[in-house]
Image (cartoon, rainbow over all chains, first blue to last red; front, side, top):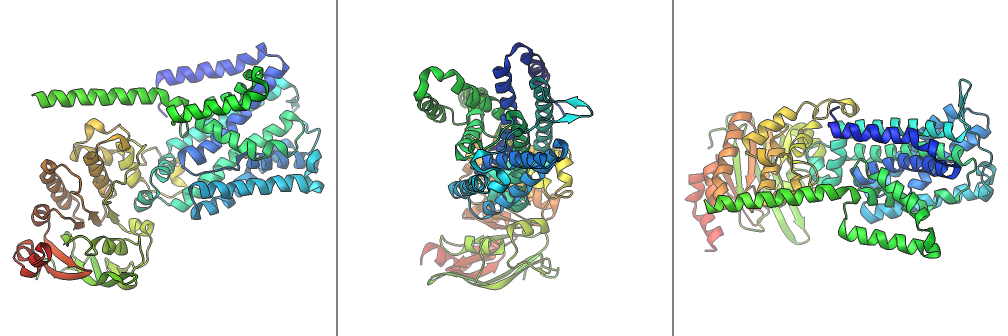
Length: 325
Length: 253
C-alpha cells in the first residue's frame, strides 16, 4: 500500500482528533460523534454499491435495521454481542445478495424502486411482527457489550469501540477498492457492456457490491442498537435510506472519503439549522439542489475539478504553441 | 484461393441469418478466418455488417446459423464467455471506462483473465498486468495522457484506448468495428501500421468492419463484401477492387 506523505499525515491527524476530541465533549456531543461514526460505516458500504459499482439502492436504512434488530433480538435471547454482531453482518450480507438479484435484471430508477419496495417490506415486518420485533414499541434496554471483563457500557468506552470498528471496516474497504475488485466495480459502473466484453463477471460483481454494502449497514446497525439502547422501526425507514444516499452523493459518490464528509453534513447540519425551525428541511433541501447543479461530483470533487480545468488549459496553450510553430 | 486456406480456421461462420420483421438484415452469410489473418468486411450502410458482428459476438441471437471458434461451436455464448475463450472486440461508438484513468482502463481490460474471482480480491492492484499496460501505452504513444480519466480524452484518443483495450489480454481473435470512424484522417495511416504491428507481434486474427477503403485495402489480407445481408464477393484486396459487382454495389450502378 503506497500512500502519499500528506495522505498519511491527514489520516494521523484525523485519528488523533478522533481520540482526543471526546474528552472535550459533553454527553450529547459524544453521542452525536459516535452516531456520526456509525453512519460513516453504513455510508462507506452504500458508497461501494452506489458510488463505486454504480447501482441504485434505496434500502440501506432497511439493511441497517436488519443488523440492529438481529443484535437486539439475539442479545435479548442471551447471545453475546460478540456473536450477535457477526451474525448481523452475515445476515445482512445474505439479504444483500438476495437484493442483488433484481439488480441483474433492472437498472437505474427501476432498481431504485425495487430496493425501495424492499425497504417498505422490511418496515412492515419490523412494525407488524410484534412477537419478534416488539412492533411499534420496539425493543428496549439493549445492553452494551463487555469483553474479558472490560465493559463498553460507558459512553466513552463505547465510543472507542466504535472508533476501532470504523477504522477496521474503512481499512478493509480501502484494501478491497485497491485490489482488482475495486477496478472491476468501477468498470461495471462506467460501462457494463464494455466490462462484460473484457471478461468482467457482471453477475458476480453486482451481487458482491450489494452484499458487501449491506454487510457494512449490518455492522452499523449492530452498533446503533447498543448505542441508543432502544430500537423501533422509524430510524430504518425510507427517509433514512434517502439520507444515506444523500450522504454519499453530497460527500462525493465514488470517493473514499465522501461518506465521511457526507455523513457529517447530513448529521450535523440539521443541528446547526435549528434556528430555521420548521424550515430546516427546506433550507437543507435547497442547499442540496444548489450543490447538485454546481458540483454534481460532490464536495470532494472540487479539487479534482480545478486540477482538470488547469490541465486542460495547459494542454490548450501547448497545442496553440505547437500550431504557432 | 487464399494463402491461409490449408490451415485450420480460427473462426468459421456458417449460414448466419437474422431478420428484423420483414427486413433480412443478415441473409445466409458464411466465411472463415484463418490463423493470423486480417479479414476485412465491407459493404454499404445497412448491408448487415454490424448485425453480423453482433451475432458472432453473442450480443444478439441469430435466427439460424452456427459460429465455430477454433473448432468449437460458440453460437449462443455470452460476451463474457467469448472474452474468456479469447475473442476480443472494439466498439463502433466510444466504449471506455470514463472515470478510470487510461492506464486503469487497459489494466481493467486484462485483469479478469488472471487468477480466480476470490483470489483477485487479495491480489496486487494491477493483478500483474500493469507492465503490459505500460507497453501498450508506449506502443499507442499515449504516455502523456496515461493518468487522465479516459472520459476526458479526445475522441481519437479514446478510440485508440478502445483498440488497445481489446488487445490487452492477447486475444486470439479481435473483431474491430469501424476503427477509423471519427479518427483524424492524418492519423489513419498510423493506426493501420499499429494494427499490422500488433498482428505480427501477437499473431492473432482480426476481423475489421470499415468504410475507409484505402485503409481496408492496405490492411487486410482478404476482404468480404456484403450487400443487402448477403456476401457479394470474397477475395484479396486487388480482386475486390477489380470486381465489377462490388463497384456497382458501391457506386449504385
